[in-house]
Length: 271
Image (cartoon, rainbow, N blue to C red; front, side, top):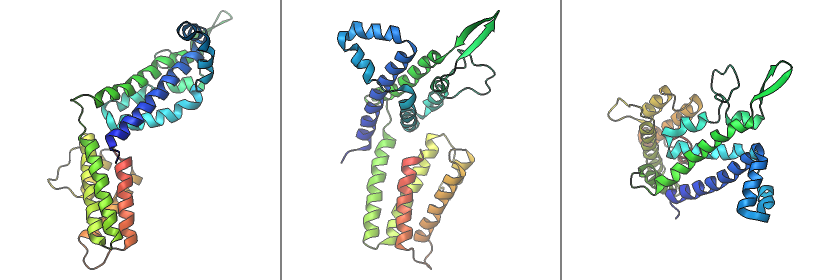
Protein backbone atom coordinates (compact mmCIF):
# COMPACT_ATOMS: atom_id res chain seq x y z
CA UNK A 1 0.00 0.00 0.00
CA UNK A 2 1.31 3.47 -0.90
CA UNK A 3 2.17 5.41 2.27
CA UNK A 4 1.19 8.98 2.98
CA UNK A 5 4.88 9.92 2.76
CA UNK A 6 5.04 8.51 -0.77
CA UNK A 7 1.83 10.31 -1.73
CA UNK A 8 3.13 13.62 -0.40
CA UNK A 9 6.40 13.18 -2.31
CA UNK A 10 4.54 12.43 -5.54
CA UNK A 11 2.18 15.38 -5.11
CA UNK A 12 5.08 17.68 -4.24
CA UNK A 13 7.15 16.60 -7.24
CA UNK A 14 4.19 17.26 -9.54
CA UNK A 15 3.58 20.70 -7.97
CA UNK A 16 7.20 21.68 -8.42
CA UNK A 17 7.20 20.60 -12.06
CA UNK A 18 4.07 22.65 -12.70
CA UNK A 19 5.57 25.53 -10.75
CA UNK A 20 8.69 25.52 -12.91
CA UNK A 21 6.48 25.78 -16.02
CA UNK A 22 4.49 28.61 -14.44
CA UNK A 23 7.67 30.47 -13.53
CA UNK A 24 8.82 30.36 -17.14
CA UNK A 25 5.32 31.31 -18.30
CA UNK A 26 5.09 34.45 -16.15
CA UNK A 27 8.63 35.45 -17.15
CA UNK A 28 7.72 34.99 -20.82
CA UNK A 29 4.62 37.17 -20.33
CA UNK A 30 6.54 39.94 -18.60
CA UNK A 31 9.91 39.76 -20.35
CA UNK A 32 9.15 38.14 -23.74
CA UNK A 33 12.24 39.33 -25.63
CA UNK A 34 14.70 38.40 -22.90
CA UNK A 35 13.16 34.96 -22.30
CA UNK A 36 13.02 34.09 -25.99
CA UNK A 37 16.69 35.02 -26.40
CA UNK A 38 17.65 32.95 -23.34
CA UNK A 39 15.72 29.93 -24.64
CA UNK A 40 17.25 30.23 -28.08
CA UNK A 41 20.70 30.31 -26.53
CA UNK A 42 19.97 27.24 -24.39
CA UNK A 43 17.77 25.21 -26.77
CA UNK A 44 18.26 26.63 -30.22
CA UNK A 45 15.45 25.86 -32.65
CA UNK A 46 13.34 24.29 -29.88
CA UNK A 47 12.84 27.67 -28.19
CA UNK A 48 9.59 28.54 -29.95
CA UNK A 49 8.21 25.06 -29.30
CA UNK A 50 8.99 25.43 -25.58
CA UNK A 51 7.23 28.80 -25.49
CA UNK A 52 4.15 27.40 -27.23
CA UNK A 53 3.95 24.52 -24.75
CA UNK A 54 3.89 26.78 -21.70
CA UNK A 55 0.64 27.07 -19.73
CA UNK A 56 -1.21 30.34 -19.40
CA UNK A 57 -0.04 31.78 -16.09
CA UNK A 58 -3.37 33.49 -15.44
CA UNK A 59 -5.29 30.32 -16.24
CA UNK A 60 -3.11 27.76 -14.49
CA UNK A 61 -1.92 29.65 -11.41
CA UNK A 62 -5.04 29.42 -9.24
CA UNK A 63 -5.28 25.58 -9.26
CA UNK A 64 -1.55 25.41 -8.53
CA UNK A 65 -1.88 27.93 -5.69
CA UNK A 66 -4.78 26.05 -4.07
CA UNK A 67 -2.92 22.73 -4.10
CA UNK A 68 0.38 24.27 -3.01
CA UNK A 69 -1.27 26.17 -0.16
CA UNK A 70 -2.85 22.97 1.19
CA UNK A 71 0.49 21.17 1.05
CA UNK A 72 2.35 24.04 2.75
CA UNK A 73 -0.33 24.09 5.46
CA UNK A 74 0.19 20.38 6.05
CA UNK A 75 3.96 20.06 5.80
CA UNK A 76 5.35 23.52 6.54
CA UNK A 77 2.69 25.38 8.57
CA UNK A 78 5.18 27.95 9.89
CA UNK A 79 5.65 29.24 6.30
CA UNK A 80 1.95 29.37 5.41
CA UNK A 81 1.57 33.08 6.20
CA UNK A 82 4.60 33.88 4.03
CA UNK A 83 3.24 31.79 1.18
CA UNK A 84 -0.18 33.45 1.28
CA UNK A 85 1.37 36.89 1.76
CA UNK A 86 3.06 36.71 -1.63
CA UNK A 87 -0.36 36.20 -3.23
CA UNK A 88 -2.74 38.46 -1.33
CA UNK A 89 -2.66 42.25 -1.48
CA UNK A 90 -1.44 43.72 1.82
CA UNK A 91 -4.08 45.40 3.98
CA UNK A 92 -4.50 48.28 4.19
CA UNK A 93 -3.05 49.31 0.84
CA UNK A 94 -3.36 52.95 -0.12
CA UNK A 95 -1.33 52.79 -3.32
CA UNK A 96 -0.23 50.22 -5.86
CA UNK A 97 3.57 50.33 -5.77
CA UNK A 98 6.46 47.92 -6.26
CA UNK A 99 6.38 47.27 -2.52
CA UNK A 100 2.65 46.52 -2.35
CA UNK A 101 2.23 44.63 -5.64
CA UNK A 102 1.40 40.91 -5.30
CA UNK A 103 0.62 37.91 -7.50
CA UNK A 104 -3.12 38.60 -7.37
CA UNK A 105 -2.45 41.99 -9.01
CA UNK A 106 -0.45 40.27 -11.72
CA UNK A 107 -3.36 37.91 -12.42
CA UNK A 108 -5.63 40.95 -12.81
CA UNK A 109 -3.09 42.67 -15.06
CA UNK A 110 -3.03 45.76 -12.84
CA UNK A 111 -0.71 48.60 -13.76
CA UNK A 112 -0.10 51.85 -11.88
CA UNK A 113 0.81 54.98 -13.84
CA UNK A 114 1.58 58.62 -13.08
CA UNK A 115 0.75 61.72 -15.09
CA UNK A 116 3.35 64.48 -15.17
CA UNK A 117 3.32 67.40 -17.58
CA UNK A 118 1.10 65.58 -20.00
CA UNK A 119 3.19 62.43 -20.07
CA UNK A 120 2.12 59.07 -18.65
CA UNK A 121 4.83 57.16 -16.79
CA UNK A 122 4.45 53.56 -15.68
CA UNK A 123 5.11 53.07 -11.96
CA UNK A 124 4.56 49.33 -11.61
CA UNK A 125 3.01 46.49 -13.59
CA UNK A 126 2.66 42.69 -13.75
CA UNK A 127 6.42 42.16 -13.80
CA UNK A 128 6.38 43.10 -10.09
CA UNK A 129 4.51 39.85 -9.43
CA UNK A 130 7.37 37.71 -10.75
CA UNK A 131 9.58 37.80 -7.61
CA UNK A 132 6.57 36.98 -5.43
CA UNK A 133 5.78 33.87 -7.44
CA UNK A 134 9.45 32.89 -7.34
CA UNK A 135 9.32 33.10 -3.55
CA UNK A 136 6.20 30.94 -3.43
CA UNK A 137 7.88 28.34 -5.63
CA UNK A 138 10.99 28.48 -3.43
CA UNK A 139 8.85 27.74 -0.35
CA UNK A 140 7.29 24.75 -2.11
CA UNK A 141 10.73 23.50 -3.19
CA UNK A 142 12.04 23.85 0.36
CA UNK A 143 9.58 21.16 1.42
CA UNK A 144 11.24 18.71 -0.98
CA UNK A 145 14.57 19.01 0.78
CA UNK A 146 12.97 18.30 4.14
CA UNK A 147 11.83 14.85 3.04
CA UNK A 148 15.45 13.74 2.78
CA UNK A 149 16.56 15.47 5.97
CA UNK A 150 17.02 13.63 9.25
CA UNK A 151 15.64 16.76 10.91
CA UNK A 152 12.25 16.40 9.25
CA UNK A 153 9.61 15.25 11.72
CA UNK A 154 7.47 12.69 9.88
CA UNK A 155 5.48 11.79 12.97
CA UNK A 156 2.32 13.34 11.61
CA UNK A 157 2.64 11.55 8.27
CA UNK A 158 3.18 8.20 9.98
CA UNK A 159 0.28 8.95 12.28
CA UNK A 160 -1.91 9.63 9.25
CA UNK A 161 -1.06 6.13 7.96
CA UNK A 162 -2.05 4.68 11.33
CA UNK A 163 -5.31 6.61 11.33
CA UNK A 164 -6.15 5.27 7.86
CA UNK A 165 -5.52 1.72 9.07
CA UNK A 166 -7.62 2.20 12.19
CA UNK A 167 -10.50 3.66 10.21
CA UNK A 168 -10.33 0.70 7.83
CA UNK A 169 -10.60 -1.53 10.91
CA UNK A 170 -13.61 0.49 12.08
CA UNK A 171 -15.26 -0.01 8.69
CA UNK A 172 -14.70 -3.77 8.94
CA UNK A 173 -16.22 -3.83 12.44
CA UNK A 174 -19.25 -1.91 11.18
CA UNK A 175 -19.70 -4.30 8.26
CA UNK A 176 -19.79 -7.15 10.77
CA UNK A 177 -22.41 -5.36 12.91
CA UNK A 178 -20.04 -4.52 15.79
CA UNK A 179 -21.39 -0.99 15.76
CA UNK A 180 -20.35 0.21 19.21
CA UNK A 181 -16.81 -1.05 18.73
CA UNK A 182 -16.58 0.56 15.29
CA UNK A 183 -17.79 3.88 16.68
CA UNK A 184 -15.36 3.68 19.59
CA UNK A 185 -12.39 3.13 17.27
CA UNK A 186 -13.42 6.02 15.02
CA UNK A 187 -13.88 8.22 18.08
CA UNK A 188 -10.35 7.50 19.31
CA UNK A 189 -8.95 8.44 15.90
CA UNK A 190 -10.90 11.72 15.94
CA UNK A 191 -9.73 12.57 19.45
CA UNK A 192 -6.08 11.88 18.64
CA UNK A 193 -6.26 13.84 15.40
CA UNK A 194 -7.73 16.90 17.12
CA UNK A 195 -4.97 16.67 19.72
CA UNK A 196 -2.41 16.65 16.89
CA UNK A 197 -4.07 19.69 15.28
CA UNK A 198 -3.82 21.50 18.61
CA UNK A 199 -0.12 20.74 18.71
CA UNK A 200 0.37 21.86 15.11
CA UNK A 201 -1.02 25.29 15.98
CA UNK A 202 0.56 25.54 19.45
CA UNK A 203 -2.86 25.63 21.04
CA UNK A 204 -2.75 24.91 24.77
CA UNK A 205 -5.35 22.45 26.05
CA UNK A 206 -5.78 22.94 29.78
CA UNK A 207 -7.46 19.64 30.66
CA UNK A 208 -5.24 16.63 31.34
CA UNK A 209 -7.59 14.23 29.56
CA UNK A 210 -9.57 16.38 27.11
CA UNK A 211 -12.57 14.96 25.30
CA UNK A 212 -13.42 15.52 21.65
CA UNK A 213 -15.72 18.35 22.71
CA UNK A 214 -12.97 19.95 24.82
CA UNK A 215 -10.52 19.85 21.91
CA UNK A 216 -13.17 21.04 19.48
CA UNK A 217 -14.10 24.03 21.67
CA UNK A 218 -10.43 24.93 22.19
CA UNK A 219 -9.68 24.87 18.46
CA UNK A 220 -12.70 27.05 17.72
CA UNK A 221 -11.70 29.54 20.41
CA UNK A 222 -8.21 29.73 18.88
CA UNK A 223 -9.71 30.35 15.40
CA UNK A 224 -8.11 27.18 14.04
CA UNK A 225 -11.50 25.91 12.89
CA UNK A 226 -14.59 27.86 11.91
CA UNK A 227 -18.16 27.45 13.21
CA UNK A 228 -19.35 25.00 10.48
CA UNK A 229 -16.32 22.78 11.16
CA UNK A 230 -16.93 23.03 14.91
CA UNK A 231 -20.57 21.99 14.47
CA UNK A 232 -19.58 19.08 12.24
CA UNK A 233 -17.03 17.78 14.77
CA UNK A 234 -19.53 18.20 17.60
CA UNK A 235 -22.03 16.11 15.64
CA UNK A 236 -19.40 13.38 15.32
CA UNK A 237 -18.67 13.65 19.05
CA UNK A 238 -22.36 13.11 19.82
CA UNK A 239 -22.39 9.90 17.79
CA UNK A 240 -19.17 8.72 19.44
CA UNK A 241 -20.71 9.35 22.87
CA UNK A 242 -23.75 7.31 21.86
CA UNK A 243 -21.45 4.43 20.99
CA UNK A 244 -19.33 4.70 24.14
CA UNK A 245 -21.62 5.86 26.91
CA UNK A 246 -25.34 5.69 26.12
CA UNK A 247 -26.32 2.14 26.96
CA UNK A 248 -30.03 2.92 26.79
CA UNK A 249 -29.99 3.51 23.04
CA UNK A 250 -28.18 1.49 20.39
CA UNK A 251 -26.36 3.36 17.62
CA UNK A 252 -27.64 2.62 14.14
CA UNK A 253 -25.47 1.41 11.27
CA UNK A 254 -26.16 4.69 9.49
CA UNK A 255 -24.94 6.72 12.45
CA UNK A 256 -21.74 4.70 12.80
CA UNK A 257 -21.02 4.86 9.07
CA UNK A 258 -21.58 8.62 9.20
CA UNK A 259 -19.14 8.83 12.10
CA UNK A 260 -16.43 6.88 10.26
CA UNK A 261 -16.89 8.88 7.05
CA UNK A 262 -16.89 12.12 9.04
CA UNK A 263 -13.68 11.27 10.86
CA UNK A 264 -12.06 10.42 7.51
CA UNK A 265 -13.08 13.84 6.24
CA UNK A 266 -11.75 15.65 9.32
CA UNK A 267 -8.37 13.92 9.18
CA UNK A 268 -7.98 14.98 5.55
CA UNK A 269 -9.25 18.56 5.80
CA UNK A 270 -8.40 19.92 9.26
CA UNK A 271 -4.68 20.13 9.97
